[in-house]
Amino acid sequence: MNTHLIGDSHVLMHLNLENDFFKTHHFGACTAYGLLTPKSKTKSLTTMLNFTNKILNRPNNEEKIIFLFGEIDCRVLIYFMHIEYNLSILHATSVCTSRYFGAIEFVYNMGIQVGVHGILPAVLQGNDYKVKHYGDPNTRGSINYTFSKQMEDKCGRFGFPFFDCYQFYELYDDRKAIKPEYLLPDKVHLDPTKTNLSQKFKEWMIQEKFYNETS
Image (cartoon, rainbow, N blue to C red; front, side, top):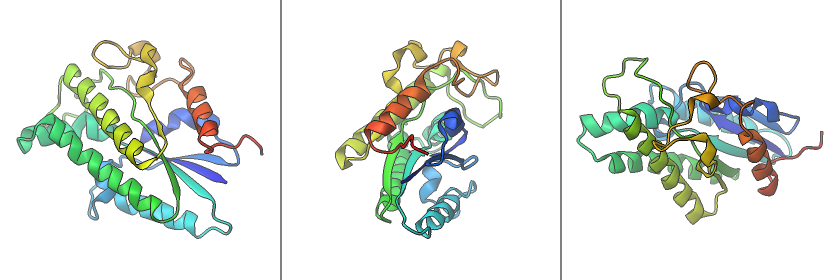
């Protein structure tokens, strides 16, 4: 059995869990929305298909994939859709989670066992990349939370294991934003040395039969 954690840069917080049977794969700036977009600027679908085809061609295939996407969607894309297309934030979030879940189903129908690592709460990062529309911290905190809960609901209805980061109340404040003391100096990524999140993720994977400690 081999398990692959695929996603954006937030997969790197679990590098310490890697062994012969568990690997993390950083797909660059791929988005949850783009995983079903053939001509995505981030090449999200192409990157995912190249990866799944590679592991499916391995002998004695017993590959499993855990998805961890959505941070870019929540920080930038959903609010952009809300402003540019006059969609409610709830509707824009639903569009992204529906496409994301569609991609997960697509991989599942290839014969690969799947699970989902929920996104982390928002961070208080400013508009460092000068995107056209950028929500305030309260709005972004709400978007991340709604995205996570929508994915948890979809996974529950289809029986896909879901790891909920919002169960760790000590990580975030009343705005549902990660407390600064838990972040790396870049103020974007979680510092795995300051929280037991990776250990809890490992325990969840063992429970869901995604993780093998024997090498």
